[in-house]
Length: 397
Image (cartoon, rainbow, N blue to C red; front, side, top):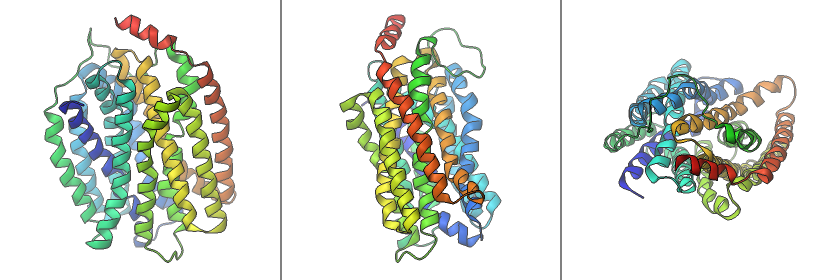
């Protein structure tokens, strides 16, 4: 892997790491600010609003202006968001603002850095680029909470020091990304407008295979990160709530590295419905934990949900990398994340519905919906054909 790809991957890691620095401290924010369950989930989920506000426009902008003018300033903004969270340790409003900023940053960097890595590694390396994106981002997602929890347990100042660590990390990687040559798509600049980038020849693949899987990328992971630990660890567990929550975050994210052997062994298309089944089983463990109050059950749930999320990301990006047109690659990867990130609202949705029925019922309904999506994705995988890939290769040549 070339030095430029490593540098872009470092920027991607810093953003992903910063996203989950605050995750193990939701239990502390809840107590410190005397928040209810839904308000606590809002700290986590407001991130989605920032993402969606960015994803709609950032892909077409990067396809016109290049990747570097987007990635560099938004990686730097990640450090500002952590500073905002430090200031907001005693303010619900500043917590929401900091998380919103992290969402804006993630919406800008994750999709565009993924497209940039695809271009740096070159055509024919779509799976390699997709796996690299997945491994680096999920490593950041996973190390953020556990490192922050360990810092909190050993050094103290849990609502300050872990965020300072992220700020230092971000300041260190910005010059690396700044040194990478920019990539601008060949040909005449495209009109600057909202564009989803789905090629006409790949619509059946996108809507029949990628879309039903994409919406669960973070619907699986977010419930493991934010819902199960906050609700189940709310009582006495006989263990540090922050440390257990940090461990759950790590166990959720780090199995994303398993995406490479899974996707490579069974193929990207087949990996999508298979990963859905893994995530559904993970939801089942979480449901059992809620029903019994046994917090250790959230650990295998986290591993299964994280594995599913990572494989869904790698599989989807591989398929999209194969069918994408070069001129709209940034738009298409942003569209994938546009579908995936609303799943981050799943914890807030489920806790909000507790006014109607118990949380366990909500999780059971989510399992049913995920099963239906897995069936659709399974059909899409069976009909997926390499002809779309050959068509793009022919057109590019």
